[in-house]
Image (cartoon, rainbow, N blue to C red):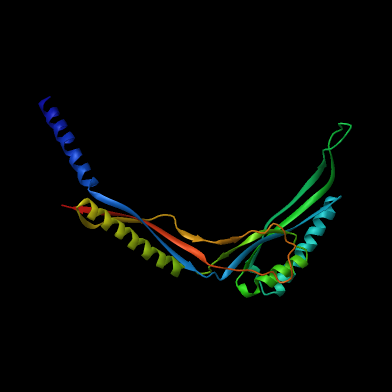
Length: 229
């Protein structure tokens, strides 16, 4: 029994000391943001057609998409930068029946959506105009981004670390303690924030004017510093 009491006193007496040592730290979050000029745009567009027969709706849509792809190929878009996102065929129901009869199918709607990457932004406005002229009637907007974001993200990380260190130094000075070495550092979140353009209609004027602006690349770090006596 005596040995058991001694063991309990030893364990309970040492745990708070370990916690106290572990708590003698300063933890800060740092953020770095780098603005960069985009050099790539991702377009999401498609073709939608309605017809009485399912085959007609699908054929009209397929023909228009084939024309759009031909225009993109002629404009210099590489096959790897053109991807079909979805193809659908859905019935159109007549639900307004004055005699309360069972709803019936009156036609079909076919949809085909594409994602296109444009790596030469000087051609973007002309490409948008060409694909609309050849049948693209659904435009879900575009995003500007950077093809190689790593250099900008690396710069943002450096700024994030500097930000976290500056905050830790300020906290230590305010608390009247000495800031010790870094105990741990981790990165969380961050990445690129694309510039998004939303357009409700694909019926646009010739050679659509587009302004790319800048994209923001963000890095966030968490740093833990020891507090010295």
